[in-house]
Length: 350
Ligand code: NAD
Image (tube, rainbow, N blue to C red; front, side, top):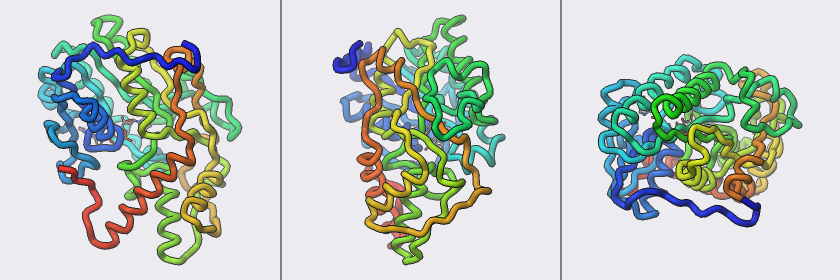
């Protein structure tokens, strides 16, 4: 495909085919539920282990189930009669979480193992697994001016300890379910997804949400100071949620990508210091920066090489970071003041 001709999505789906989305009480799963609902799909089953009142988004007309998918029976129930399955359920968070809670991250292998087998037994047409840029060899990510990572850079393997290895294992499992059992599996390696309706407080949040919250808080409390994890030079690329859900739809409905991991990420590289400057600009404030070199910082640099996705679709995630961050900041600010006023901040649209 050429860059200016985006390949149309060809779904082999009827409007009332059952779509099952797990981890749907969380950020990306919840956003995908809404996306398919808005496209007119009438049978969507959303599954998460959190109690319903804690789901980030609830979409009207959707069947919501609270199940712990680390149990095989729960997975069997979750995928009953499903035509397509999108698995986002995982115990995860930003660097603060995945460096500290490796056991929780690795226990997601229970979810991935049981979900694949249940989907296979149920005869689903297409199965999506949410992988991560954390599968990439960490030795290639030791410089902030990093070379962007292409799909083949996951091997020889030296993934992020815990979380990254678990994702790599699950990718291989997906590949073998296709090779040996002919279930069509798809997997995208997400690069730092952000946007409204994501985690913004509590320890699992990622850098864009954490920095927005800190800027909002510093303004509100009048401290005019911000604590930055690391030395501010770490670089990442950040993917806006709308690009992410569109990319998932494209990937799952493209047979060239069966059992083939693909980057789903922006290629706009941003340092943490730049991120703070953008959030300050959006908030209309200038803060005194303090750095915590002992805080979790992850690899020095990571970016997405989008050669493959552009070749397949003539498309790549392209929301400018400043535009996505402006929307994210506005949403977090609204959540922050709602919470301060004693209101519930988990959105309930039912
Ligand atoms: P999230 O934490 O907002 O959502 C994950 C959801 O899974 C949560 O609501 C959680 O309650 C649920 N869950 C956990 N264990 C479960 C279980 N045993 N049974 C049922 N539900 C369970 O995370 P997210 O940002 O929406 O990420 C979704 C997926 O994408 C995850 O697999 C994550 O590893 C992957 N991913 C996300 C990013 C990112 O930047 N957000 C980057 C790379 C990969």
